Structure formats: structure tokens, C-alpha cells
Length: 277
Image (cartoon, rainbow, N blue to C red; front, side, top):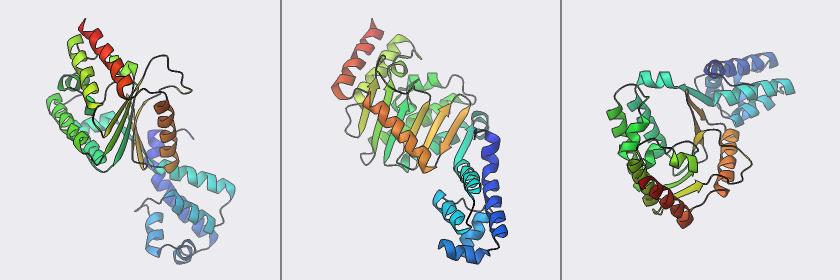
């Protein structure tokens, strides 16, 4: 099934209705279904009215109890997967305020202990100098000064030694000249500096590195529970364990092609020097 914003907006309601209709057709009461699934009756009721979102395990248990057909299983599991995916378009984010978006990101970062960032196109705000942050907001409406300040405030999370960060950057992301040469040199020097922290692994994927997948988009994995993927017009939020696992596998593939430690810093030093000449 092709994902689009309209489907994502209605999938939660469709899932709730489908499960209730299937229970009605099976001739089971909510109490009986709850017993078969080892759930409370109130949980079944909340699932069927859309007040809570069931996990895929919950949905699979209900489908087994209802003796659903293979076609029904495929249809309902597709709805469940869509229900655990969220589309956040840029225009809506801008209307709500870019500072609010920064607060949401800060909450995601605060709630995770292991964070993985794949950055194929440009440097993320957590690693950026103030000048680079400001330049990156050139096409963002609102007050860029407030948003830049909030982005820079978020960088304090990097000092939390209880968290582990892995950043994978392509050569293109690092060398993309978003700011004047001298400022680019300072930005690359900051990457070098941050790569020396014990809780940060900074990997560089050089041009020409043989890899079996292309760098389609920026994404971040928070622990093993949630993924955000960035696009020009918005972002997707994935919570389905299969989607999270797929992104972890892709991240692992890119990680194998990256240089870390002194090898990465040697490359960074060369690129920084190039911007100074």
C-alpha cells in the first residue's frame, strides 16, 4: 500500500472500526474477546473506539481470537502499520511554530539513551556552529533567531554521558558549502572536536565508498522504538517495530562503510584546510 497523508490521518479510525466490525461478525462480546486475548474488557473497548492505539501484538492476538481470514489479516495489519506511522508536513509545523518543533525534538532526545543519525545531505543542528545553524534556517518562516537559539540550546544534550550518539555523515553532507569558506572550515573543525568525545561516534562515508544502497534521506533512530525520516515537505514518524528494524539494518550497512576515529579526523582536517586555502 502506498503511504499518503490522507491514509495516515484516517488509518487509526479505520483500524478501530475494522476490529469492531470483525468482532460483531464473529458473534463475540467484548468481554469474551478480552478473555480470549488475556486483555481487560476496557482495553478492548478503548481499542474499538479509537481511544487507544493497539500494538501490533495486540492486533495479531485479536485477529487470532476472531479466526480472521488471510485477506482480513493482511488488510487489518496494513491498517495497524499505517496507524503507527505519522506524517508531519512542514506547513503544519510552521503554523504551530518552529520553536515548538524544537521542543518536540528535545523531548525525543531526552527520552532516548542511544541515538543514531544518518546525514546524507547536510550537517544536523546538534553538530552545527551558530553560523551554520542560522544559514540552515534561511528558508524557514518565522523568527529564525529564536529557532536558531533553540537549536543551539539542544546541543547541551551531547554533554550527557549517559547517552550514546552515532552520527554518520556523507562527504557531501560535510562539504556542502552552506556558509562561506572560512565558516565552513570552522564548522568542519567542530566536527573534529566533537568526534573526540567518549559518548559520540562520528563516522564519515567518503565519496566512492562501495555500498549496496543509496542514501535516500536523512533519518534518526531513537533507541529501538522510533524513527523520524526527513523530506523537503515534511517528516515521517515510524513506530512499527518492523520499520524501526529496517532503518536499524540500513544504518548498520552505512556504518560498515564509514571511517571513524583518527581516519575520519584526517579526512576532516584535509577538508577544513581546503576551505582555508
